[in-house]
Image 1 (cartoon, rainbow, N blue to C red):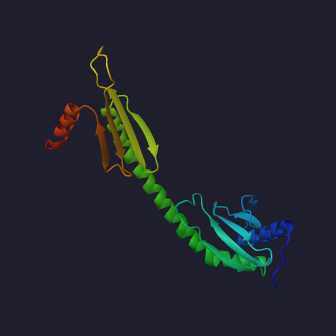
Image 2 (cartoon, rainbow, N blue to C red):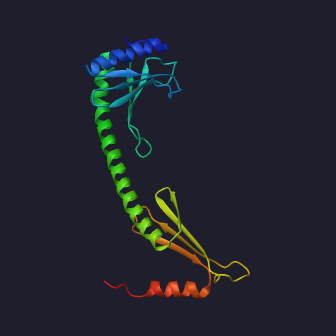
Length: 203
């Protein structure tokens, strides 16, 4: 018969029972960020975590269990629905249905994190090289790209009059494999830069 879990104390005790059924190294912890109803975090000895939740207080025996991942921004969090027939039943369903999905999601999250780290390292190397070619440039990190801004007063030293600014804005793409450049300033200087860019690359 499904258990009626109507208070946080009852739910906490049930979650403790589920944790014991999952393994001797499992522990539980509060889950204050879950605001839809009763909830408890269950963590095993390897750090694998699930969120045991009761999303509808009108159906207190109907539970939803989510995989808890270190970074859930890039990966859809897997979940299962289960009836609170008993702690053993819930633990069995977590082991049988959720843990395999949890492992897949964790592996995908790790692959994404590794790829983004590799991208960030490659992008940083290119940005550093660009900034080195533009002394005094300002570097701005944005989402999966780096913006480098360089400005220079093109007037000869001591010359009075309107300010003449040469400006270069460089966008380094996510993986550092592409660079976009926007330049403005004295026509002669921009033309000479374009001419240098058009020269054949020497190996």
